[in-house]
Image (cartoon, rainbow, N blue to C red; front, top):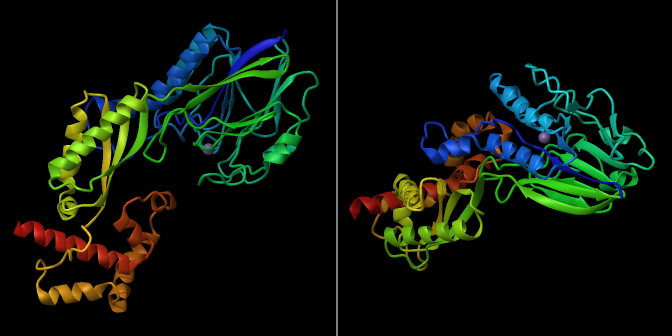
Length: 422
Ligand SMILES: [Mn+2]
């Protein structure tokens, strides 16, 4: 019986710069900084231990042009580990590592084969009866349907299509090299090793059409377990399809309801409980990188609004209580509400100011002023930055919702005045 196994991975984004860690230090931050490398080395270790027949990397091995040669040398060193065991690696470049974007080059070990970016290329592995078809990206913006010109399957072989694609525009990813599921199914291959969409998903089975997702979450929008797949094939049938978890840092959003909390220390205690629960039930021994979202109606709403720096520092202090590299807090988002039936402004804001602020939300002249001051600046922000805002106040500003913005300002001012009085 002809049997073999391979690993399918994609979107490694080696040495991807991690936003928001500037000026931060400590073992947890260092762990995050080196996470893409550690995850990739872990994947190579899996390939060696499982004695796979080959490894497929379906695009975005790199995050863009290397800052220096260390990124390339790290990759080559990992490939050298596989070369030592006689394991070949098939690499296809995607939008992030398109030929035109990577200006530095290094000699790759013989076991690494790179798909052509000019036309579809096929590698046939005679000894195990597998054929791999693929075409890499020459430039970043590949808008044509690459899959349409992939060749017919090699008769009698287990055929694998390797493709970096946005398919039909999934999950907020740029729709590069678009194609349809039905079209891939009709191609007659046995497995489509896709890349580009960072949230892993099995799009179709028999034939398998698979986005493995990235091997390591890089920020709070890449939450949950990450890794590749180990596929075993016998007589041209997939006999096992197993997820490999390679992430060394696991991103999570922890929603903490602070309803009923009378003091800030009550909220801290609830945060502690949520972190503990996440470490025990969802981190699988990885370091947890989390965002805390405080919600619910509570008497401490105003105190939370005006003491952002303290809340973040205290959440980090709580996390340190679980050990140096157990959990790290990315941010604390305050989405709480004042207790119902209570006029948040009552007695806090002097009469005139109260009236002015109350009317601000509906003041069209004020909106015009805000638009003049903010609109131009906002329109100059890069699209990915604009799309990644998760703060209510910033969202209102970006969405030109000036009445919501005025409302946030009124609430904040009221909380500040109240805090001063207390
Ligand atoms: Mn990509």
